[in-house]
Amino acid sequence: MKNIPRIFISDNIQTGDCVSIPRDIAHYLTRVMRRGDCLAFGGGREFMAHLSDDGKSMIIGDQTSHTDPSNNITLMFAPIKRTDDLLNMATQMGVAAFLPVITARTVAHNINWARMQKIVTESAEQSNRNSVPKILPAVKFSDLDLSGLVFADERAAYGHNVADDICDVSAVLVGPEGGFSDDEFAALDSAGARGISLGKTILRAELAAPIAIAKVLK
Image 1: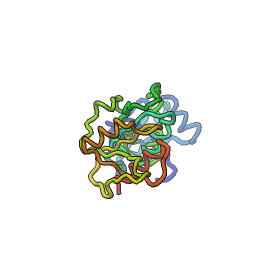
Image 2: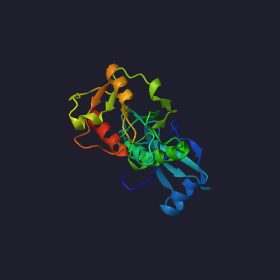
Image 3: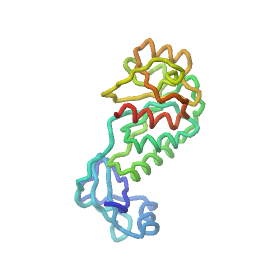
Image 4: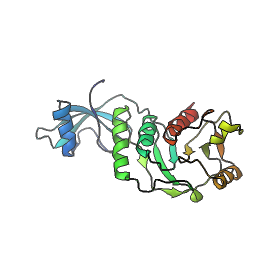
């Protein structure tokens, strides 16, 4: 259904629902897209939908056959200056959830998480997903269970041995702009965390995230 606008409504929508919508959604459909119908989605499902006559509600029609292309991966990441770009790209990669992790070298502590949620919602709408990834409350690196964790290991660019074949991954961790500290690498290694290589160059953190996701999805 190419070119039909896709709008996230909620995770609990059903055929026959009449859902109140924000004014900006009605404006987008009627003034920008110049139409009253759309594809409404949430909770892994997609439905045909259209605006009510007064433009204040969305009427949910039949469910479509579109299958949610999302995966079950949680991306653990250190907040960075360009967190919006990281979340945008990782949402397009299909991640199920984001877990911000405060590391020793994390410098971006004042993230507007409400704005970040809006960014991942818009990215989900544009990338043909039927679900919007959740942004979980931030945790400290020291509070993570590192045993068996998969993480982007920039040491691989300098010849450090990493695993070649990793499968059945449900979570992956990427570090901040300055990388993990020596103490954090030591904690990861001693806990048996599995590092993966992102290539022979050192990548910006916002690029490292989607590449790491691509590696574990192979």
